[in-house]
Length: 197
Image 1 (cartoon, rainbow, N blue to C red):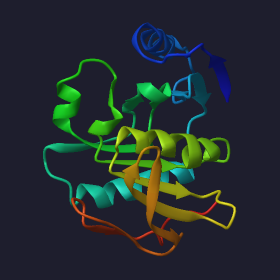
Image 2 (cartoon, helix red, strand yellow; image 1 turned 30 degrees about the vertical axis):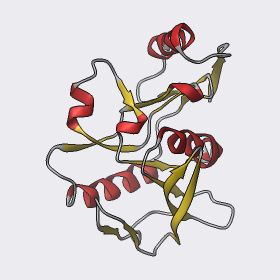
Image 3 (cartoon, rainbow, N blue to C red; image 1 turned 90 degrees about the vertical axis):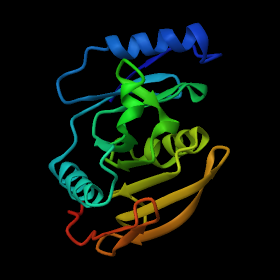
Image 4 (cartoon, helix red, strand yellow; image 1 turned 30 degrees about the horizontal axis):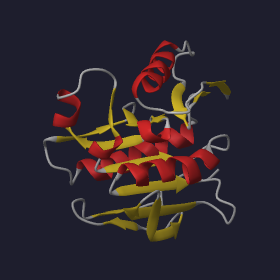
């Protein structure tokens, strides 16, 4: 992973625009993910086959229950400017209207109904701590963290009820156990097929 630090003493107004411009102009190899995490532009390699497999399984479950005017996006930028962040979650569920009212290549994170992050060895800390705080502070109602690299073994944690930059843990299960998302999803995801490690 490479990083470029930008002064973000006030990540709003001009500083935010400069940060987004650098993000947009970062030349990364195809398939790499470019994000802004706490004012640092980061580049991550393409995800592993296991990672993509898990994303597909979750996406298939979600498509069975979401309204027709919502989409599931794999490369949608979600902006959290007050934390100097612009994340690309592995899956973002948002109303299509959120993408159509804003030109460009990101939406306010608050427009997402659910974000899903699937950790890799290199980014697990960002997903567990920095992005969780950013999504919570933005008011994203549900955050599903699929953590193949958790210290106690592969786990899936569903966060909700954000207060400030903290979520409440709604459910936590090990790989192989089902996890149920509350309404407006009302779906149980079978994690028995999730590849481990």
